[in-house]
Image 1 (cartoon, one colour):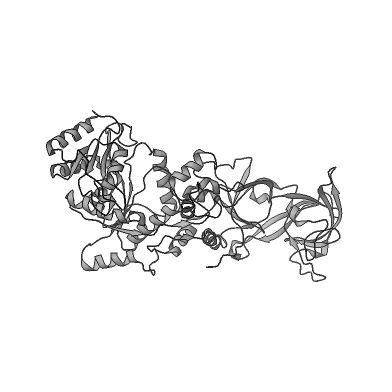
Image 2 (image 1 turned 90 degrees about the vertical axis):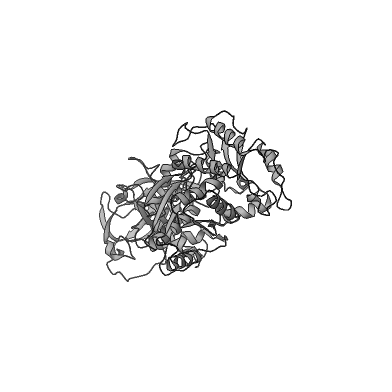
Length: 552
């Protein structure tokens, strides 16, 4: 985090250090490995790692892997990669499953203290008995089982004597509590499923609300930073730490989650987009996942700057997705080499240019960063321009190419359209132009001026390329607005979120590598797709357009 930026979490850490409550800050980033991380997780990563770094503390990467039915090593590996890519290194790597034996022992302790019991009610019955936000719950008929019976049943649950859903272990707290989370929450359930880390050793697994505070306490975490939806679970968090007699007492602190317009943040919804084929995987460039943003061409610096700018507060309002794009532009404008790419080509023959002649023209690599030097661009009789840069019957104040009009080719010459060639369907397929050799860029020509400058690529040495242009995956509504309306979020999926075009790039782009980034004249910032690019085919993802109306 920015050393000059204050927030309530940072203030609490300063107070705890100054008071002597803690002599070292220990935080953790605790994802469940049941999907890929998204931009919302990036905020948690940056807060936890950033604040610990600022106070010379430590941060643990811990996988909350207590649900074997949804978790996979694939997700574990992707999360590690994402954290490292964002620029952070964990001090310790832990798995919640490393603590299963201790969690079991702490659950036994609760039973021995009369604070937990084995319940035979079904999930639906437990939900019914719990009551509502406006009405109290009622006790389970199994709530007053003896300590001895509960110990025996819990031991038999561990041994695998019961089937899935037959029994659960519940904390014994208060069924009339105004906080519904304290109405005897389930803390263990039966699940005969193989676990990615422990195999078939266990058939009972702790619930998140029970496991998470124990994990924090075992690791001596000082500040357990989470999003505001866990605020009403803080009393249960504290109850578990206290009643399980943990030596360390971490403090849970909540902050507002990061919501971004034109997307969804729910792992369940993102998985649905993947499973139902709306996107081509978790790393699809249209996804708000960190892997998708990385593949699209976002930089870790831009994401970190964006998250820091959004700040740390209790509020969870939606941030305009254009704000994130702003930080990408700011980061790339001094880094990305300028080049020319034609994404919708139209052939141009310069009839008075010598046949067979090739000349090399000079161009700056980055006009805003002269230290990057210059590049050579071939020029010859046949070039490609954008179809959008020609109109046969243009409106007023159209300054690009049309019959009889003259424009400048970027870094080259003036050309004038003399003839239009059409196919049998009347489509324009080729232009015949003439050039003025006296107008070469860089020679100081001042004889006359033209109002239009267009980009181009020399045809003989042009490198074929595919261009993938993206629009927001989700139209208009935020997740909260969709839920209020009661609509399925899939109703808001943009059917035109991807456009694929075939064109050409300059020959010096031939050696481009995956994730190389460029600014294409007039089109925006592009990145080489690491998944689709092959030795024989360059594929570019548009990271962001050149300009936006967004203002900070």
